[in-house]
Image 1 (cartoon, rainbow, N blue to C red):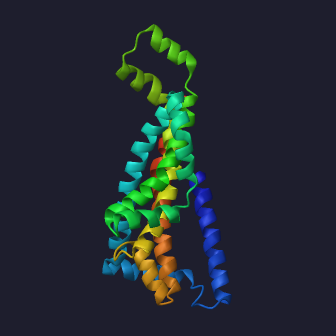
Image 2: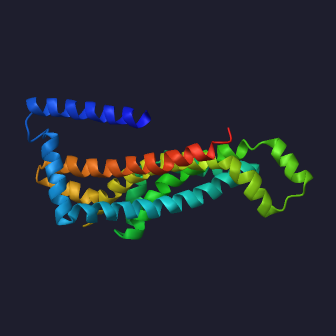
Image 3: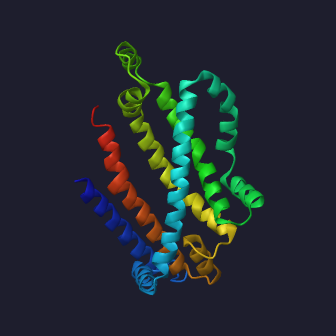
Length: 245
């Protein structure tokens, strides 16, 4: 039923798009058929898969770094009042610093390198993960904590059977919000860094040619990949970790 609803909403969007394109200038709003034809040509040439693949690799690396460090930091903040007091203000500063500023500073300090791009994306994502995980760590069930103390769980057992099961929903929530944020920032980072590869490079190239069909085509491909990742992986994972409820 959920799949049918998604397909129906997609069909409605395509119909609206087709209707609007019939009345608009084709140079500013091309028809769906024109966009899909471009996507097919770009895929056949190999450029589409290469550029999207490069961007996805950057998203994956920065996402893993941000999730790993953010989870550890969030747990530390949630479990230690001293750590929370010391790091709360710096965390809020980074959290509220515009992504553009962090990206520019990363390029100034590290140069126009791949490392700078990954660091910029990871720094933009890390505070968000830490905040979500901090709330999860603060809300641990005291009854389970008491049980662990009573049965003298060692550190490994406590982490595996008390801490992680309660934090898994927060991890998935952080991942779902993070993946949507990470790919948007990656495109900004690619554009500012003037890289010669990636989806943002292709979009910027076609923008200079005023090729709206190509810009929309690349946007649709990347959005489709992210939506598929969320629907096929993150949503089922979210349902799995919440099954005990």
